[in-house]
Length: 114
Image 1 (cartoon, rainbow, N blue to C red):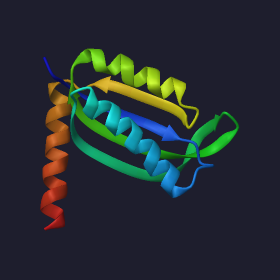
Image 2: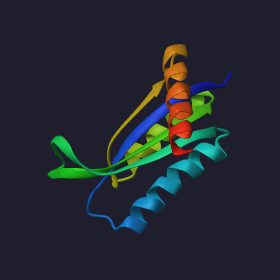
Image 3: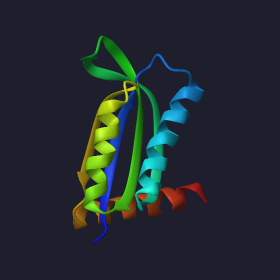
């Protein structure tokens, strides 16, 4: 059964814009090759961290919302841990209320852009 997930990861700030995009593409490819359906992708840009991580005070935040089998999450998180460009990540399974809220947010965003 496909569950809906959301993953947020922070890319190290020492990379160029192209290197950050390449990193995001790598993880999107892992998801799609694993059979996931990417629903939303957001680049939140360079943000200040609440506390230093690996001597860094800023990072590039990215969010990907997707539907996938549960087994793919373990593979995705293993790749996050192996990639030195990722300084933090969090993946969680969305319950029906989170999915509902996300869909409402997307709908409002679409209406405001028109």
